[in-house]
Image 1: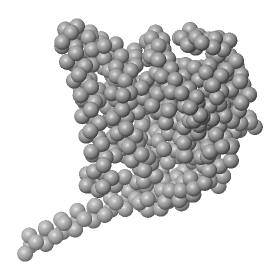
Image 2: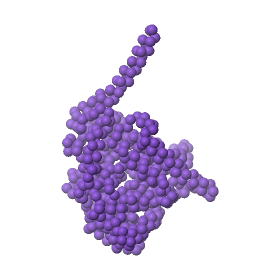
Image 3: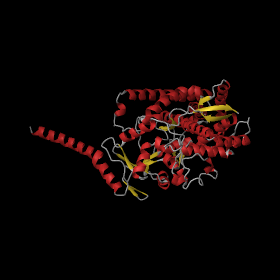
Length: 517
């Protein structure tokens, strides 16, 4: 029976070690981190086992979303109610808990600059919920290290200035089709338009044509699938991921599996069609758009050595997923809030229209050169990006103990970089931080705010959004063409209810009343 004793001893030893590890992770380590920050004057909501502060966050979010707000641009309390509450309670420097992980709020532009410009890998992207990663795949957003460098190097040429200029005619054509439909609606007496849906369709068409060589009609199925995927992803924002949960055949997981399988199948068909065309034409070229650049990547000589920089089909699919989503979502949201803002603030709508008519004329579509001269339009778009940035925050994680400003940061601490809150900070923007005032950008971003990194709608540093110039160019062209042909006011049926659904969206749509000029 001696052998049984040793078996039981080993089993109990393993069980004891396992229990000790769990207790260390969910209780002892968080307690030590909490004491570390409290000794430095940083406090926050109390730590709760397993779930952290998610229950409080969900409760405050649900309450905030239950009713619209007055026509105010002070939107932080509604979009990030838990952030607003904890800032008032604990000050700007506070810590809260994502499960058993500590997350430190970093609302100081100088420290954010230090984090985002770090080139030594001390602050890395947080590994997101595996279920949420399905939305953009393992593209630029999620890649790290050499693989990220390789993909960025391949994709960058698609967003160079000369390449972007060549996209303008396509943007103009897609916009003209949308405005022709609007004109017919107005003439038929249906003056109200829900512009969020219109801009989602428009920007989806533009990204399909310019980056992937197809029209929205051909790619519509993929976009519809991604919209469903986005809603499922949004449900994960305020939840703790349990390891292995993504493999359980729950109803939501089965939906996610089905959507992911169908999206990848459709994108694989797009890539295979491009390959067949190249084989038939025997040109050796897959095209000069983004998809073509990714498919054309070949071995390159770097430092005297031949390196394989080709992207696999699955990698190309992941990048296509990223650009199908981010490429149209960011611009459609920017245009939506800009139209809502100009519908509320008629004086700036008139000033923007006057500039467009002076620079472009009434019946001449914008081109790459004329768009560069639209200073007031640019100011309006910057102010829309400031008040309603598509991305509410960025997140990073310290991979080793770090000194950040006055604080000693334990390894593994997550860092919240609150873009929305910084964009509304009166200490940085002045007493009118919550007011729509494009004039603040009349002398450029540097003179609009006390710290240049207090304005970062597209991020900062090496990982700044690769498509930011494309998004701004597209938004300028579309807004200029709208101002040429229409005047508009925000509809009485519009309910002001900004909410975070991956990006900051109007919860109940964006209705405006159109009038033809």
